[in-house]
Image (cartoon, rainbow, N blue to C red; front, side, top):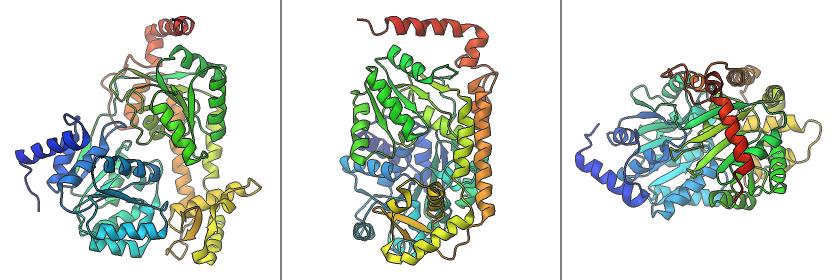
Length: 499
């Protein structure tokens, strides 16, 4: 039953906004989403990176009775968000494969006792019938689905486990549901509505346009020299340099450090302590730039990033725009530079192909893990030493985890309750083809001749206000501004660091 949110309810929401979250007011579009949730109306919100999505589900959770469930695929991010909520005095927790069985069961028990207002849950947990059954004993008024594009095969980072969310919604008694994402075109939006069962919902779509961002494509003869010159000529400004592999990240890091640039690095191959140390040095300004893979950035609260350099071509426009969108979150001018290298397209096609193994390889690995039952197989045995077949083994493991046949807990791969094995070669090939089509769209962006911003907006089904934005490298060249900007950069490089 819907209820009208009174003026008093908004005043209460604004009081919590100030007292618990430290904000003086809502950003554009936030209150409308919060209002819809408080009126018990389902919602889908597509807000660009930095648009304040988290607040749209954290605030209603405090105003609604019971325990709000937040579904998120990002284990490290959910821990960071829970830590931040706890620091604010909000009773929150998370449940994921990073916990021991004992700790996960303890948190489920506390959730059933009503100890938490907000619980973040990794979607792979829904493969456990016992876990889903336990949720029947929890008062759940609201389910928030973060990174909701993961439910669509057309969304980047498709996660088959998201397809179980609709069943969870029914199990929880059909509470109000809100789905959030930063990057979803019309096709993905329709999938989100259909696959989550949200035929009756309000759709909130913020503009994808970020007028303060300048988009550039550069094709330097020497990529490393370009990065060095740019970072040195903008020495007082924070920037992120995204590279496609861990090795390239490390090479960039040591190259910049040896040239006197205070840099940090971030990739999944570092230990947790190393990642935290490098991340903190960037956040507190000790390191002005950070070289990173796409593992870096989700939930990072640094509003004054003045430039993003993509050292390599991302695999999709969704990935590119999400990463580029981490610049200029304070609304001030920022620059997003994509370096063009013809080898990147071929490398990305190769990497995508490697992510989709023969179904026989995935099924064979599933059988082996199933035989080990409760003892499991240490992940390092499957992912460790590089050898012939190790790449296929790694991609096979990734697939059976994605489709819910196995999970990693404390470094050990265990089978789930899901059986029999029904994944087909047709499904694998279909998902591969979707990724290749997205890669081709990314290549078309690099080959664009008219306006980069207009291409981005049309990709996300938004008609640009004009065919020329006046704030991208293509528009600069057409109007003659590019040569003056080049001179500005040259002068900054010569004089910028002189006192």
